[in-house]
Picture 1 (tube, rainbow, N blue to C red):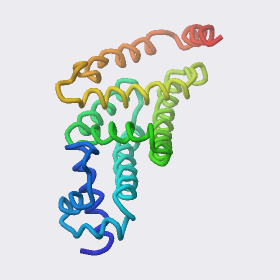
Picture 2: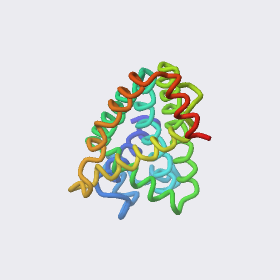
Picture 3: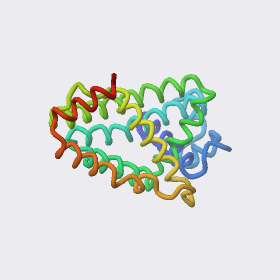
Picture 4: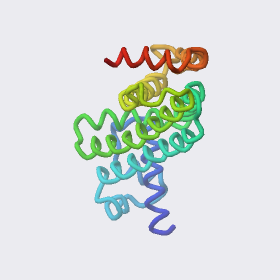
Length: 208
């Protein structure tokens, strides 16, 4: 196994263990055993468990978000935007990404390096959502009448919240993503049937 393959195996191993069992009890021996390598390689490649956790979580988070942001490039309606989020939620629950993201968010409360990584990752996510919303509004002649940045931030935060709480065993709040499925098409229909000039006056007066 090459050096790069060993690094990848260790990062994959710690992501699997975290998604399944959380961060409690993670040890170099346990992670190395899951990866099928000698535990000394955890220290050789990452200077210990903490270094491995940071690199593995960053890689996994960026990878998850990259799938999402790529799909967002084709979005032209709010319903399509919702569908991308729904697919992400389903995928993240199955592959353990949602559980991992929950642990990353929890760790960010007390770990400045993890918080910085999470902030950067979410910045990419928010930027992709912003571009999608701008395209949707521009197609309806509503560009410039809504605070897109604030709307994108709210959508990004709510999606993360719904994704993580929806993946909790037993789903204490049901399926949050499914619960809001009727709102995006309703918004699209409203934008289709309300004249752009009238919508601009409504949104403009609301902003003022």
